[in-house]
Image (cartoon, rainbow, N blue to C red; front, side, top):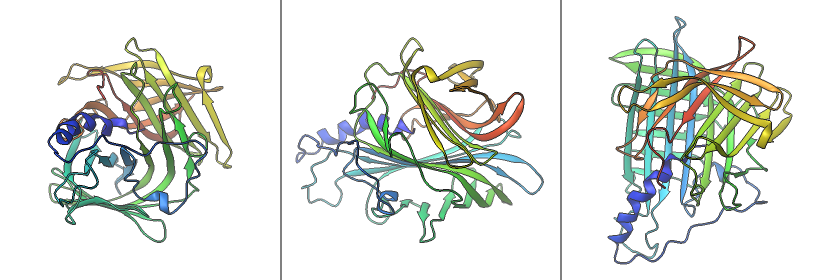
Length: 359
């Protein structure tokens, strides 16, 4: 549920003011009952205000070492007048994040980039997934395989992510509510249980890796409800072949403003949960030595009659995106447990704990 790109909007307002040609921006609205069409909707939707492709997963080296990884590309429409003929007009911005979690290091390794789209240097293509920001790339080929090439500051990853299951349309056939107002929504689908293979390079050492990943693609033109200060989100590949996505949006007092979950079992049956059928309960917190934010890094998640516990691969998975998306948040690899036994692996995102998000 990668809302962090919305933080960029406050930066973009300054860009709009600098454009003498600017008219009030008009972005495409998210509408219910609008069917998603593929492969078209694998690609970019430049009429919408914000969009992201978000891949997270667990990797294992040949000697059994476990790593978490995150790769995210964002696209943001700035609201500049599309009639502006200048090739330099920043009508679209591209932002990208990459991170590795390694318990042997004990903190997140992270890199980030931002640039205006254009000139063959940065962009998000329509029609299918084709994302580029300098030498960072994510592309989907004709067989549906994602290819990620990402030479970051402290590491480099080259991965293929191959689908093993059908798409998972979130919410109501891809229309995902994010608040009490119907306009607070996104178009949202996931690709869980991606099979991953490739290499990770650090300090000149090349390591073969394999594992599994989860990919989210989401686009919207709205901001959150004005009472929202942050959210907790998780996407988990269940060990039995199922998939679980759950999120809650929080008020300033920590109470839940809106929440939703989707559970697809190993037979492909899907169930939706909201309201009292869903709860996030902190079990253990970790305090960042840098921001002093207190994050609930271990959670009990109740979805219907199911109860799970989310436990982090490592506590320090705080990500500072102040040079791009403008926020500091916790995002990391977690194990899902039921009755003390592992039931899956995925990622947990915790935002709005350093300070309320101002969208």
